[in-house]
Structures are given as structure tokens and as C-alpha cells.
Amino acid sequence: MNLVAIVIGLALVEYFVFGLLVGRARQTYGVAAPAMSGHPVFERYMRVHQNTLEQLAIFVPAMVMFGVYVSGSIAALLGLVWIAGRVLYLRGYVDDPAKRSTGFALTALPQLILLLGGIVGAILSTH
Amino acid sequence: MNLVAIVIGLALVEYFVFGLLVGRARQTYGVAAPAMSGHPVFERYMRVHQNTLEQLAIFVPAMVMFGVYVSGSIAALLGLVWIAGRVLYLRGYVDDPAKRSTGFALTALPQLILLLGGIVGAILSTH
Amino acid sequence: MNLVAIVIGLALVEYFVFGLLVGRARQTYGVAAPAMSGHPVFERYMRVHQNTLEQLAIFVPAMVMFGVYVSGSIAALLGLVWIAGRVLYLRGYVDDPAKRSTGFALTALPQLILLLGGIVGAILSTH
Image 1 (cartoon, chains in turn red, orange, cyan):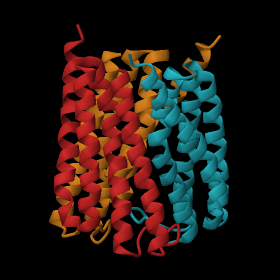
Image 2 (tube, rainbow over the protein chains, first blue to last red):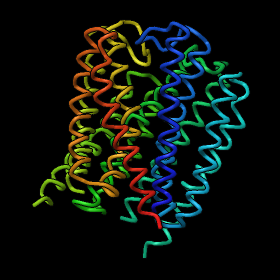
Image 3 (spheres, each protein chain N blue to C red):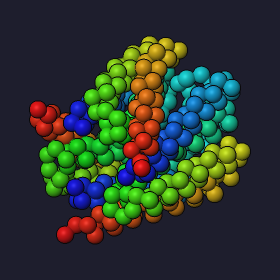
């Protein structure tokens, strides 16, 4: 489970950095808090951060479940794909919201495998 | 704890489906990313998804705490009520935001029992 | 780990109360759901709640990791600073968004120590 914890930690560092980018964009494009809109590029950074939060709510428990009931090493590998997918998602979305699909798929796919695999693993462990 | 894990997993599947409904509503009502408003029905789906994320932040750790310190079976039962409450919340909110109260109560109530029960259980286990 | 669980539970109670304050502000300032804007003070409460959710996504797993791999007692102490920092953040932000920095720093700092300490602890435990 150490590998699972390390990869979860790295994903949270990535998410923390995305939060810093939102703060920087808030200053760069002059969007004063508490406004959440006002400049399209700021809104893209904000949406990337927000969407990553939405994904983390599934990712973190699914990593743990898959790690406990299926395999810690495979969970860690899928988690690394997830982290890379988020980088592509950020780059694509900030460049053009229409280009966010590839990065999204690269996070949604490993995440679904982790979640469904974790559920199946938990069910098979019940007897 | 297997039952707790399974119910958490099912709640995350429900939340994932709510996310798909937001994406579908985005297309149906022509709200292009990164906009988060523009059509009332889209905004309702978006708020249901967002509110479910807000609840999950309490639900998942509270399920684990209640499962560890009080009872895994009762946690699982309360979690199933939570999952059903979210379906009612979705139906009510999309139909009319004023109708979201029943579904909200059916998620807030089991969630509070899980959270407060988990804290009390943890305190009683400390000696 | 009991102390870690109790402090996580208290942070979630704080977050739950912040959610109640958003609901109250929604009524006080006449912002009907699903609207997320319409009155500056409502928006401040809403942003405090939302930002706390954004921080919790890091805080909860980081508390567990630090508690498992480094020290449960230190994790609990850092968590109490985090909880106090959020109260300052709420007070500062509602008073004036420009005054949110101190409370934010008092949550971001312990949170970063928890996260980075937890990752380093997990790496050192791998052999």
C-alpha cells in the first residue's frame, strides 16, 4: 500500500499546483475574489482545478479500494496514467476547451478501472 | 469493512453517473465549456453534481470512521439510504429546485449519524 | 490513529457548519437555487465553503498518510491548526475578500507539511 499512498500523494501535489495556477490566473487576468468568471482563460484554469477536484473524489477512494482488494502495484500504475492524463487535460483545456477530451479520457479510463475493479474485488472478498 | 467499501464504491458510481448527466445536459442545452450557466435545467444538473461532491467529502471519511469504530453493517445500511436520498435529490431538483428538500434530508440525516457516530466512536476508543 | 480520526471528524463538522452558513446566506440575501451569485456576501460564504471543500480533498488523505507514516499526534496537532485557520479564513473572507490571506496561510501551511511529510514517510517506508 506504500506505492498507492505515494501515487495518491503525487496526485494531490498535482492538484495543489493546479490551485496555484488558478491563483496566478486570477492575478494575471484581473479577476478579483470572490468572482469565478470575468476572463475566459482564468475560467479555463478554474475549471481544470474544479474538474480535478471532482475526479479526485472518485480517484482517492478507488485507489485505496483497488490497492486493498486487487493489487497495489497495478493501482499505482493506473494512478500514474491518471496523473499524466491530468497534465494533458490542463494543457488541452487552457489551449482550447474543445481540446480537453484526450486528457479527460486518460483520467476517466484508469479511474473507472480502479473504481469498478475495487468494487468487484471487495465483493469477491466478502464471504 | 468489505460492505463499507462496496457501498462507498456504489455511491461513487452514482456520483460518476451524475457527472455524465451534467455532460449530457451541457450538450442538450447548448452550454459550451467552460461556462457553468446559460440554461436553468443545465444549472440544476450541475448543482446536483456539485452538491453531491460537497456531500461526498463528508460521506466517504464518515463511512470509514463509523465502519471502523461503530459498525460496518450499520454504516453500509446508512450508506444505502444516502445513495437512495441522492436519487430523490436529483429527481426533485431537476423537476423544481424547490423540491430538493426531501432528497437532501435523506442524505444529510444518515451522513450526520455516520459523522457524529464515527467521532463519538473514535473518542470512546481512545484511552 | 484515533486522534487523527477525531480531528478529521472535527474538520468535517466545521465544513458541514460552513455549508449551513451558505444555506442561511442564500435565504438572508435572497439568492434562490440554483443561482450561485447575486449578492456579494452570499458569494463570500459560498466561496469559503467551496474553498474548504477544495482544501479537504488534500487535508483528509494527507492526515491519514502523515498519521500512518510519520506521527498520529503531530498530524492531529497540525490538523487543529488547520481547523483554526479555516475559522480565520471564514471571518476574514466574509469581512473583506482581501483579508482572506492569513486564514488561508494557516490552512495551506499545515496542509503542505502533512502532504509532503506523508509522501516522504511513505517513500522511506518502502524497501
